[in-house]
Image (tube, rainbow, N blue to C red; front, side, top):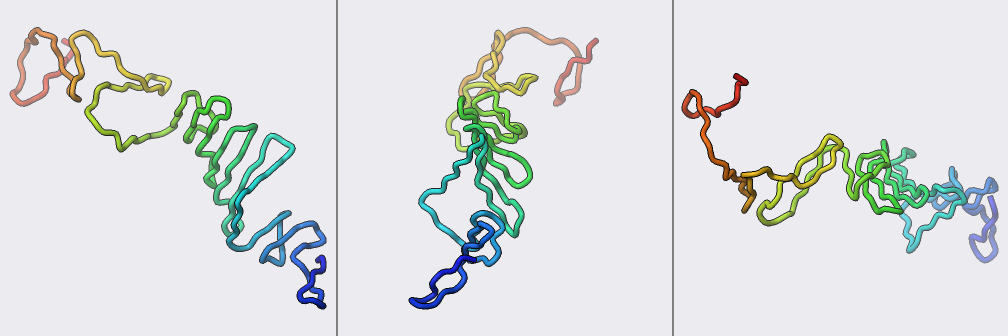
Length: 171
C-alpha cells in the first residue's frame, strides 16, 4: 500500500497497491484499475498501442458483455459470441454474422420488421446467397394495393372435387 492521510495528522493505507493496481472500494484489485460499486464518468477512453481496444463488463467475475474496437470496426460481444458488428469503412452492419457484413444490413437468422405503415407495393424474394431484393413479376402479373393479380386468360381442363385446390400431377 501507499500511505495516505486519513486526518490532518494520521497516515493510513490507501487503495493504491504496491503491485501497481488501483482499487476503489476494494481491498484486492485484480486489474490495473478496479472499481467495486457504481461509478460515473463523463468520458471513458482506452488508448492501446495495438489495433484492438475494448470495454468489458463483468458480473460476479464473469464477462457479461464486451464492446470492442478492432482496427476501427465496432464489435459487440454478448457473453458467448460476437453478435453485432459495424464495419468502419463501409458502415455495413452485421447481426449474428461473426464479423462479416457483405451488405448494408447483413443478418444471419430470422429477422422481423415492424412499424411500417401502408399497403404492400412490392414482393421481396431471397436468392440462394440469402440476398433479398424486389421480385420481377412476370407477364400478366401485377401488384396493386397489396393484392397480387393475374391478367392472364385461358382455361385449365381436367376433373376434380369441388372446394379443393387444383394441382398439376405431371400427367
